[in-house]
Length: 341
Image (cartoon, rainbow, N blue to C red; front, side):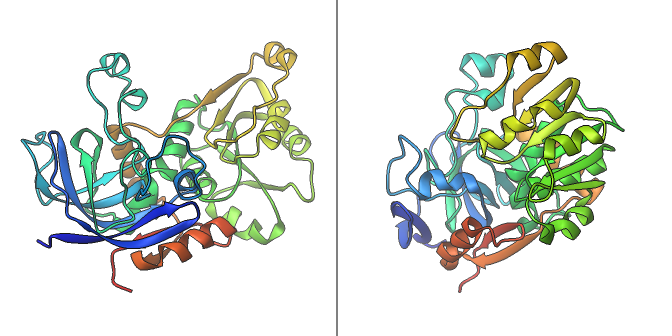
């Protein structure tokens, strides 16, 4: 095994720099992973653009990581072994000791690292990871296919599962991007009546192909009014970061409807108490998921043939891939591979 590895790290906001780093040794409870693929996610902007507080630089971003276990520090759980292909998502592994862990809420662990933020992530040939954060990858999913499902996939899959929607209910997916294009597929495969809300008629064909029964172009229609004309929504899953646009859809919820928020905006949501009370509406946040929930999402994706639409780039072109994702020109996910450029 080599003594060094290549990584793309952030040394100053907006700039990814190619560096050679010494190969690390896993500590207690950790493994060393040889990375095969890493998705590029909008949440990487916190580190890459310097928007996230408390990040120690330089930092290697990336939290949609798939690779193989090549070195361990101590005994692994029975379901893991050296040489196995595993994934690591945004949540880097629970501690088993905090109150939330003791309650079994491992995704809400207060002492877990955030992959690519509080510790180095997957824009690299190798990375360290806590064993408690590892996800087993099905043989029938390639590493490139699996990578985006470890964040964009689980975020939308879990949000829909937690929404309490039933087959036949009207579910609105707000935003048709990296998260939204997966949410459309999951919603259709779960048996919902799927309404997509997006921008522009240039994506209409894609939206329908991804599983929507109806598409509402906000450039042509008032989205809330259009949803109401369809009878209202039992669930609205918002994948966007425009809090004003999210708030504007609340009135389209049917009585006892639920707004599921998966996109993290910078501004507060504006919610009318009278509307919430009068219709008994609910607003819920949805944070990715535990390793076992990630494995359920991967299994469902295989079973229902849900896949991200992906463009790949070699690791050395991480800057170009990041800029394309930020420009909105990617359809719909960018994934880095460890191929030499």
